Length: 88
Image (cartoon, rainbow, N blue to C red; front, side, top):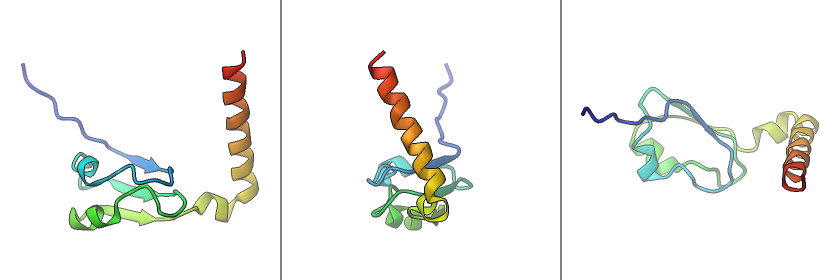
């Protein structure tokens, strides 16, 4: 059987904690654009991105900066939906 190799094609990370670390970034294709929208410290290991010559945009907190009301509404709606699911 031929073993398949898994690649993460497109990924936007919004968690304010390093999620895409050196180990996980090995699975990112070189042509993938990484966009980090998380609050500081971000969610992508910037040193590993640089060392691996990956494409990277550091746009920390961008949704809240450019559309704070809309962003807040989406967050509120998401939280309400989660609560509804939990307490059905």
